[in-house]
Image (cartoon, rainbow, N blue to C red; front, side, top):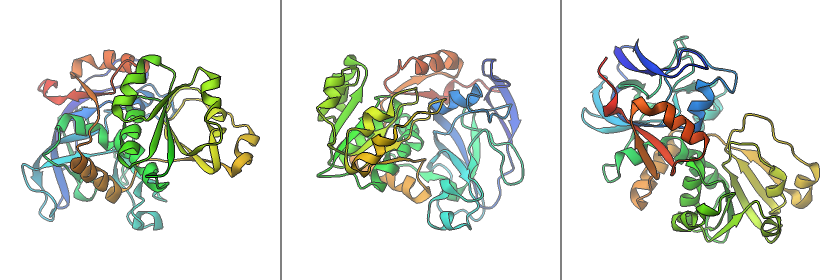
Length: 348
């Protein structure tokens, strides 16, 4: 099936128009005409080969929403014209213990990423900076028409990346929860933790973000450049969600955990972070990580957002301004997620 979008051809060149073929839709497939695609920080990491696993040509994008234009003969979940979403993965082995437990991102064989990956037949996957996508219905999500479609797009990555660990560690009423960083991930973590009923403390380096954090649901805001402000919270947190993708000192936050508290990292800094052994020995603390949620949990998150009117705070941009958007993401100059209006994609 003919498709077109924007692709990176190496780690230094700008993304440019690119024509390519997707697989012909099979009986279980859904064809989605892409309306909006979010820009994730991981898009930039992978386009620039900062994780060392990039495959070119690369069409990035895994925060995808649009309308169904065709369905296979065996598809039951969608019909032509329905809203649909596609997230970070488009397949998994489906038979390992993790897939059977609805933990598909942790597939033993390895999940198939929406882009910069090879499917189980060895074909390169291309993402959402494009006009359309073909995905098995099991890896495609239903979207409520109640919400702003463009603002739903980042829920497919930033949303589920924060929702999943907050649910896994039972964040809710009676829990004191910290969110480190107020960016694309952090603002969603803050919204969810507040919605779940926790007492939420937002950690940020920027005094300019104090009022925003409070509007988004923070009960308290701590400026992390002030050691005395951090010290006031020592040993008091049940859970801290670390959403920072830049170099930072994890020990500062580990020391804030109470007995059996957990620090969960969902940011992806380029370089390893150092851990002081005493920071985890004290208070029997745990340092953990989390990926996206499985298919069922992601749909649960989307349904929860529809019920509670939760979406990402976004800035719409056009496909020809990708370079500018990338640079602004790197500077933290976006509130809080860029979304590409795919109507700006030129005809092939």
